[in-house]
Length: 216
Image 1 (cartoon, helix red, strand yellow):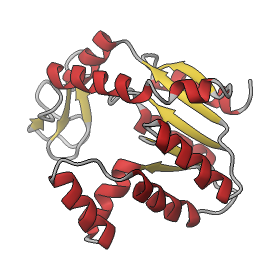
Image 2 (cartoon, rainbow, N blue to C red):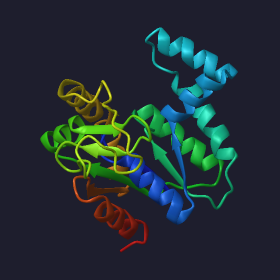
Image 3 (cartoon, one colour):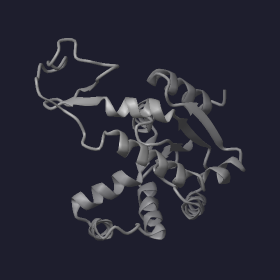
Image 4 (cartoon, helix red, strand yellow):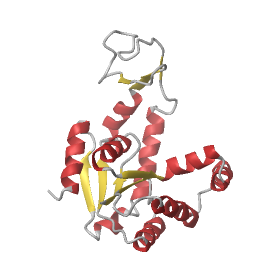
């Protein structure tokens, strides 16, 4: 089973991908994670990626496809793949088709986590974590049981991500819509697109995705 998981930042793609990895033995291939890891490791590709990103340029599609192909080659033929953050353009969708065909794979589903922008802003801007153990909390949905004290480790220091603010979230939503607009019609024409309510409880979203993968 090979799928593309779509959704704006904060929609819960990472959470759902992790669940699929645990429950189905699938592997998440996130182009962002792959490039960040390469930069951190200082590989040849990493050095190139670092230079390109620091210059504010786009990473070449052909090179990204080559890197993705190398990661796919490390996986067993029976291992399902979750593509996250790729493809984002019609050209990348074309290259993904070529990568899949060359490895005897097929794309089974394109699953979009649909979110309400205002609700997503509330979800993201309210997030904070324990500075000691990383346990996640929310101003509205999940406060520590004892005010100012982490439920997990008892820590009293908390932090918020600097980009978890309304302006950044709305900018990301606009970018997401602009990037996915060109690729959705391609996959809709093939009957591959399914949509799930990304604002539902995590378990409900998981159940909806599982039902799609099981053909229900």
